[in-house]
Length: 277
Image (cartoon, rainbow, N blue to C red; front, side):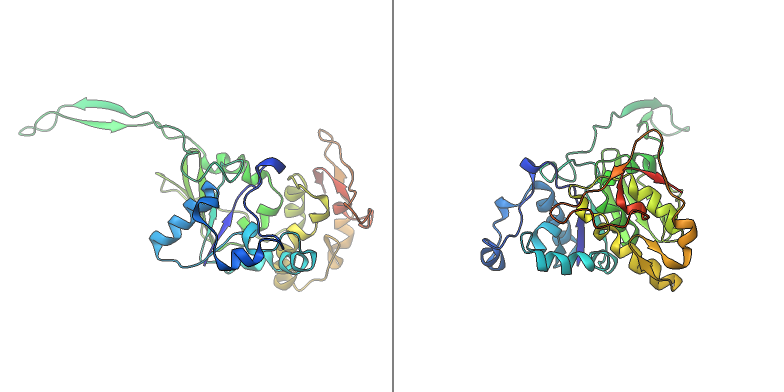
């Protein structure tokens, strides 16, 4: 199966969701015309590649069933990790924008030249390639989302659809369209580095703060044989307590919707805003 990473967008532009009231209808069929453009194009890619299944969070999890959501969010990282590859709608602000229409128009220039003796005059076509697509990928709407961090790191392979072209990413590194030089990608190595990067990302619901990084925590705990607790590893507690707020972007205490502030104040996860160690 293939997984999809996408921005849900604002409340009024949310994609089609599976809810308790439409669950039985969705189990029977989901009309093609009811799918937003990003979902349709992701399904079309799978069909062309002969892949029968696609996992889309808003459809595969009953969104207003709290028990199911709790169970599924705990294994979300594994879902992306075990997919064949991940389709990332990186430059789309919501699911109505699709994968391909976000691509900026490329201006080609015709350059005439005289061929070697015996060949007719001909011409070539050239265009200016945008530099640093990995930088462009990091600045996309999708990469500003907190949930997407573990999706990108844990997925074996990801195809990023950006406004400047495609970017392929796997354990060997990232490769941009038209460039044969690979760049390394972020891996589960330094937990404090991951926490810093994660803390500056956006969440619609602050109550998802630790849910959205649980998959990375599970992988890091397994790899380093450490004990995870409220955003830190007990074996690294001394270093993990030395966090502070980014001076340019003030932090404030995280209030969890409906449950009050239950995160311990010594944890970096207890505040909203970018932190450093």
